[in-house]
Amino acid sequence: MKFELLIIDDEEIVLMLIKRLVLKVKLHDNPSTFSNGVEAINYLHASSKPEKAFLIFLDINMPAFDGWEFLEMLSSMPLEGSINVVIITSSVNQSDKNKSKNYKEVIGYIEKPVTEAMMKEVSQIEKIASYLNP
Amino acid sequence: MIKDQQTYTILIIEDNPGDRLLVETYLEESVLVPRITGANSYKEAKIILSESQTFDIVLLDLSLPDMGGEELIKAVMDIAGNIPIIVLTGYSDVEFSRKSVKLGVADYLLKDELTSSVLYKSIIYSIERRKVFNQLEESEKRYRNLFQLSPIPNWVYDLKTWQFLDVNMAAVTAYGYTQEEFLQMRMLDIIPEEDQVRLKKTMEMVQNQEGELPKFSGEYRHIKKNGDVIFVETSSNFLLFDGKPARMLLANDVTFKKKYIEAIELQNAKLKDIAWIQSHVVRAPLARLMGLVNLIDDDDLDQDELKTYNKLIMDSAEELDKIVRDITHKTEQINITEIK
Image 1 (spheres, rainbow over the protein chains, first blue to last red):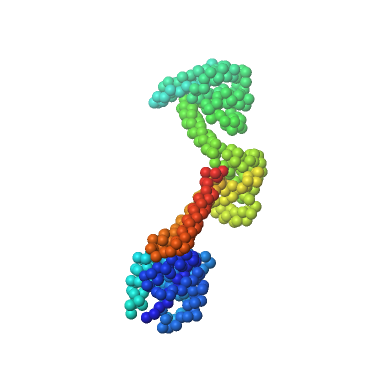
Image 2 (image 1 turned 90 degrees about the vertical axis):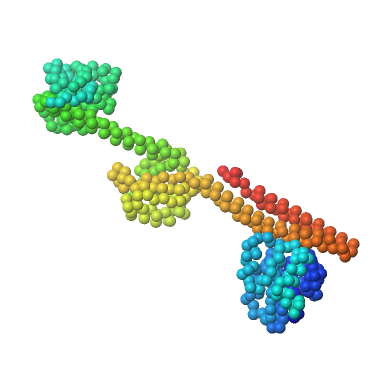
């Protein structure tokens, strides 16, 4: 099953770094990048279909519209298809990690910096692995 | 009759030798060891009493050659200090006997009716009564001192009119009003105007409960004569002051303590801020930096890419540096020891 990968982070460099690693470990061949959550929400709103699957790499600490607000909006929107989120954050607060468990869409939590090894681990997450090796 | 074993030191002021002898005889009948000193005149008594105040009792005849009557009673009371005085007289005058007791003599005995037991009983009662009176006076003085010398401002105010009835030195020193000024003021005069409505309600509640509310405390603002507003923790107790329902109020200045706590709370907030920055803001460029360094380890980078990444690494490092400086600045903003 084909899936779309969305990377959301307010820092261009981080977007570039994550994209490089995604390509390198062959998690996805064409990820889309978004420098804020609103753009990503708009994109999802426009392109979600029942048969589609989305994987989102989400940064938490972003100006104006942060990762938590993104997740709140995501769960309140009538989106179609399957949507899963992996949080990629620079925070090392346990409270952030605990909070992320309140959202059913969140299937992974990564503390930056993201390494090649970590990205490989992401591909091992059950849901994602099922996309990669159907 | 069993004689009293105790030693009594007695001063008899009496010019008539016969009367004195009679009194001495009565004393010896009831007391085992009476130590009797005699004085023939007021003048002599004055000399004796100025030399020694160790008498247990003074027996005073009211008609001496150099003084008599009310004048004599007053004069002897002056020099006798705390020693009880029993008046012995030949004249039965109920009105005068009452008056002399009012003046402070312990008892008033008629010579014609004197017996050994009457005299003995009067002496013992007078001495014991004086002891109790002295104790009362002492304890009153002690409480008076506790109020006056307390380092914490204290007032007594009338529960009906809220007028101050008494005030101690600490209140005078702390608030800047003289004692006379305070006694012209009412309780609400030391409350800032904007707090008066709120306090009036509380005070009416306290007023209505009178003695039902033995102790009441709270935190309020007071205003000094110079207009300074201070925070105080107050505590008050119900009491009867000269028969009037009143409350004794004590106010502990907690302005400094309050400021100190506020500063600590502010500092706590800043520290929480710093902890948050630590986790979210500091780690962002740091994580980016680490990510970039990982990238450089890759072999398949050309010279141009390397140059770009090196610059990005330096930018991240500089950003990190700026954040660390900001944190330091934030930490230095509040210095608790500077609070005055």
